[in-house]
Amino acid sequence: MFKFISSIQILKNNLLQLVTTIFITLSLSQNLVANPDGLLTLKAALKEALEKNPAQLKQNEKINELQSQVGQTRSLILPTITATGNAQYLKDSVNMGSARFGGEGFNLYKLNIKLSQPLFQFGSFEAIESVKKDVEIQKKSDEISARDLSKNVILSYYNVVLNSFSLNILIKQRRIVEESLATTIRREQSGRGQRIDVLQVKTEIALLDSQIENAKNNFEIAIATLQSLAGNAQWTSLNIKPILPSPALTEVYSLVDESQLNLPELTKNNLSLLKVENQRNVIWGQHLPQLSFTGDLTYTNYSKSDLLDEMSKSYAFGLQLTIPLFSGFSSIYQRQALSSQYLQFELEKANLINQFTLLQISSKKSLESAKKSVENGEKAFQLAQQTLEEANRKYNLGTIDFLQFLQVEKSYIQAQFSLYTYKYNYISNLTNYFINWGQDLSKLTELLDR
Image 1 (cartoon, helix red, strand yellow):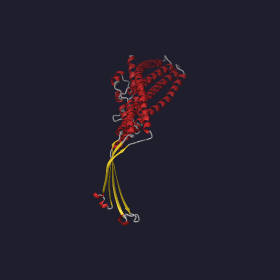
Image 2 (cartoon, rainbow, N blue to C red; image 1 turned 30 degrees about the horizontal axis):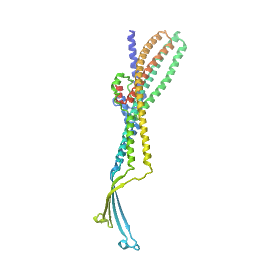
Image 3 (cartoon, rainbow, N blue to C red; image 1 turned 180 degrees about the horizontal axis):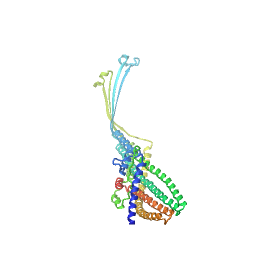
């Protein structure tokens, strides 16, 4: 019978905790908006952040800027056509001889069209490829930025839940202590207790009030952080499911393919190496002969109506060869600088490989350790629940004093808070594990949202 009553009490406490958490979440978060079904899922929060975070949008816009530079560079190998028109009123000096129109004033009209088409310039296509590499490098930077933003949103999202639990625990603790105050007062009035016990209970309530106020502030800061990451200051309400998920490692590992790593830092480094190779050819081409086709078409006449007459036309077409002879050894120094850049990128690549190798091992071990902490925390919390029930029964019977009961109650609260902290740390380690092994965070999001 006692076991049955205890089970009912545990269920009642859990339901009360759930209802209180949701109430606190809704009442304190006045600056966030829920999705249409009333629940802000992790997936919805990530989507909001990736679409509206100003820093992420800035990264996206840089791609557009660099893509326009590809077109600008490509235009350098296309023909250049210019047209110039002149209309002048002239008068030749009679004293100089050969004066046109007997030294009288006259009009002169001229239309000139010039064409220049590069035919051969070593490195021109390499220049286009170099700018394309800039676009691909920026895309990888954008991917890194989106990944880091997603990580921060995941941790911030569950930090809201963790702070909600912390606040709920303190409110629950205050309720327990406040209930014990009535028992302590009755004991003092009946002569079975002392005045000091009443004062200790009131002191504990006052301390809890201060802790609750701090917990409310931390909770509101956590919400503001999530709001800032999402880049949406117009949200009006928030409803987050009060759960800190801790999926089994077997389920996690089934989603991860450690043989398929997507590490944008390494890809970005490889693109930088290829870009240096492109730039070498561009610089080398600047000091090699260049061949262009040129054309010059001119119309000249004294009468505007006859300007385009066949007899007014003159033209010249040909090839222009430009041979650089001496540039002050600039090509030597430029190639030396590029060789140094290439070596730096190679050393950076080796360092990245070493770092990710270490991070992959450490993140996997940390993940397994975090999961073990969650399992131990759950066992400790179950024992703390049983101990608290027994202490509550004995305190009501008067076989233990308030200080003993308070110590047991604090141990219970600590075990509960430790469990929530272990679960939050497990989520943090899960996120790091997915990132260090180059896995898609959307898989983790779906797993945590289940």
